[in-house]
Length: 147
Image (cartoon, rainbow, N blue to C red; front, side, top):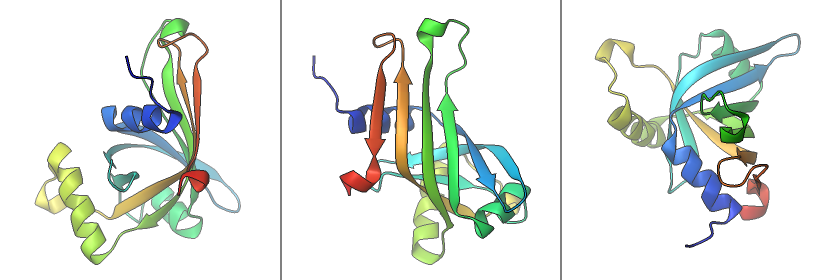
């Protein structure tokens, strides 16, 4: 059995899930949003689709530093698996937007009338909790050290 590195464990977790909570901050308030996402294994980026005009969209435009979580829904503490992360976010344009939208729509077909802004979430730091592997297992990833 091959042991995975922290980065491989985290990338695998990201690829296997598709809903995240992203938390944003302005000068005077905090807000979180639940969003579908796709993970691009080549670029190690997360892509989300959400309107600029939403509360979280406006806050991400004003402050591109975000944090978030991705988790399974379990009732047994020994089965908790989840990811906590901090990231930078940006709205995509032109070629990058077209590529990200194509990947996103493979998983989540979108009605033509609901085309919204595509955003790239670049994880800077992450911690994966994986109790089913071995209770108390935590994998850390500092993307600044990887790149």
